[in-house]
Every structure is written in C-alpha cells, then in structure tokens.
Amino acid sequence: MLDDLVFAFFMLLLPAILWIHPKTRRNKGNWIIALKTVPPGILVCCWSSWLLSVVRNALGEWLERDVAIPLWVVLGLPLIAALLFIMAAGSLIKRKSAPPEEKYRPGPSVALFALLLPPSLVLYSVIAFVSTFAGIENYRSEWRNRWLPAEGDTKIVFQEQSIHPFLAEYDYRIRFSRGGKVTYKLLFTNTGGNTHFNLYRLKDGRLLFRDKDWDYLVDPVAREVFVLKRFESKLYAVKVPGEKVDWWAGPTRAKGKVVMEIGGHTLPAGEVTGLLDGKTYYGCIRTRFLPAAQEPERAISFRRNESRP
Image 1: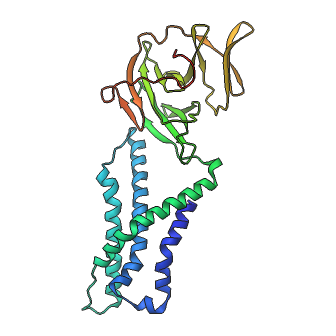
Image 2: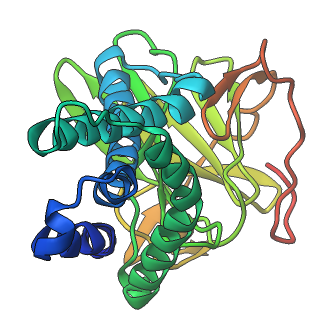
Image 3: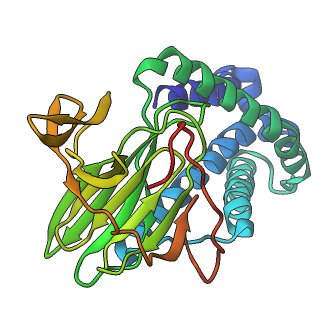
C-alpha cells in the first residue's frame, strides 16, 4: 500500500506543478496537455492491471476453479484504458479553455506515454523492492489458490503464500470446504525451491501430495492431512496439527509407541505400511493444478537424504 502511494506521488507531482503554476495552467499546447495527462494515465494503466487481477481472483472464488485470462487481455486492457483516459482528459482540457479552432492532437500524448511507461514501471519496481525489503522479516504475500476437482461433496483448494520477496520460499495450506464449513490445514514450510507437487490417488480414495520435502496423505472425507514417514522399515502416518510448524523430529519410540515431534506436539504415528501400493498418478500442482491428461508425471526426489515411503 505504501509503495502505491509513493508511486502515485511521483506520478502526480509534475501534473500538480503544471496546474498550480499560472503560466503553465493556462497553456493549452498539446505537449503541455501531454505532460498533464500522461502521468495520471500511467497510474490508470497500473490500477487497471491490479483491478484485472482482483476480478480474476473473484471469478475464481465464484466459479471455484482457476480462471485463465488471455495474455493479450492482461497486457492490452490496461494500455487501452490508459490511452482512453489520456485522450479523453486531453480533449476535455482543450475543449474547455482553448479557442474552438484549436484542435486537440493526441500524437504528443501517445508518444510521451510510450516514452515514459517503461521507466515508470522500473520506478515502481524499485519503490516496491525498497518497501518490501524494509519489512522483509514480516513479508507475506496474499494466499494464492490452486483449485482441485471436488472430491464428492468436499471441495479442496491448495493455497500458496510467498514468505520472501524474491527467494522461492513458501507456506502451504489446504482448504477443505463442505456444507458451508471451511477447514484449513497448514503444511510444512518450503524453505527453498519452486512449488511442484505430484498428486496420486490411493486405492482407498484418499490422495497423496508429494513434493521434494514431504509426502502428505490428504483425506477429503475426514478433512485431515497426515505426513508420511518411514521408520524401522515400516510406513507411518502422523496427523498434521494444522498450525504453523517451526520444527519437527522423529519418528521415534517412546514408551513402546511410535511418535513424532511436530512443533510443540508429541503426536502418535499410525502404521500404514502398504498404503501407497497401487497408487495412480492424478496430476500435479505448479502455478495451477494440471491433471494427468495434461501434464505427464515427472519423478520428484527427496531433497533430504532419505528414501521415499
């Protein structure tokens, strides 16, 4: 928010000076009009791009699926909105105060817009970077949705949140919704690397989410998530607490039972050896969910020195 205000200040500074100074306020030359209208037009371009992303997210929530907007719309609509604003404002300024025989010529405004837009975007990027870096310890992006096909009457959304302004570090969570009730289950933090999960359907109907760090058992009916770990040549499932996890340890044996330390919890581990036998590739999650028919399986190796369950 602060970076947007700072950028708007720089964009509106020159037009404000031109309107305040009596000599330039009365000057209705086409180049002066361009200097008065192009910087606000660049703001319109940026705000139109932001509004487009808001509409896309709102449509995704309404339709409960990813909404793809063609690249020509993403790039073209903000430019068209900016140019329409610049030419409408320029024409209005000329018509209100210039003699009728003096026609508004948009050429200088269009040329200035093409000239100023690239450095303005660079300026915005610098302002955003400085603003973000100043608050880097508290940086959190908005949650981004990756819609999955519904599992019966349960709707599943994989959500990703960037936790670093320029490094590939993310928090993940899974959102279950059924009958108007929404449940969130936080997964472990990805401390480095782009998002890539392979999804598999198990014989009992549950799902396996696999990335370079963890294997998660996702139960749409119970709306629960379990982390899978191998211990003493057997496979165990431990229920994820659903809260922010800063550390983990195990599995290990305690009083004759297999347990795992997750955050501040000592959680029981249930043996599920053989659970993954006969699993079938279902799709993958990257920038969005891609079904198996669209994206073939690519093997994912553990980043840690462990074998896959």
